[in-house]
Length: 217
Image 1 (cartoon, rainbow, N blue to C red):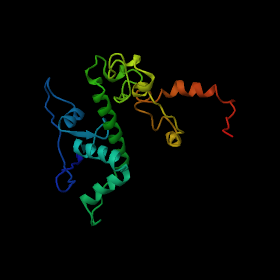
Image 2 (cartoon, rainbow, N blue to C red):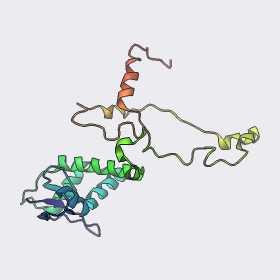
Image 3 (cartoon, rainbow, N blue to C red):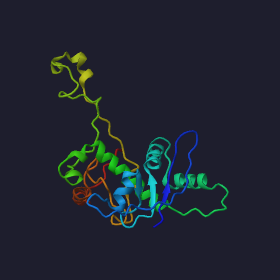
Image 4 (cartoon, rainbow, N blue to C red):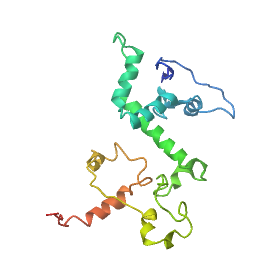
């Protein structure tokens, strides 16, 4: 089986050569399946069924940072990798946008689970409770974490120092969550971060169908 691997070396330049690697076929109690062999080599497979396309952890980690900092999308990033592989256009580079998008989502998901400490739980990811992956705001006043003793007895003139201030605004980006179908694009962290689970949310919305809009005028 031929294995196509994207390898990014971050120094002054980024290169993307292709490699063809055989699997270890040793038959012994300590043998590992192909997927585990790839992961131990820091290659993330696009599928767990007969993987033939992989991205190195370096490639995925670089994209994760660029997506957050430079607002780079999958299409532009993969196109950059293609140009780094062959900028002349004389060779045909396989289109791996869909595969890379899937790998990038899964990689970010696993990083969230790792940082949430789920890898050390007895049942792992399956038992992750709602909101467990949300990062707490360390600047917000909390009597159990960052408020001095007697904070609730200070004069009114200094009460503002320990007051929790919340701001609410319209979410004009919420429509970006609309999908053609949940089956084709399921949420990986449904309810595990800052948003509630889709099921209870949809049931709540059904109770507000006949509610009249409130005008500010």
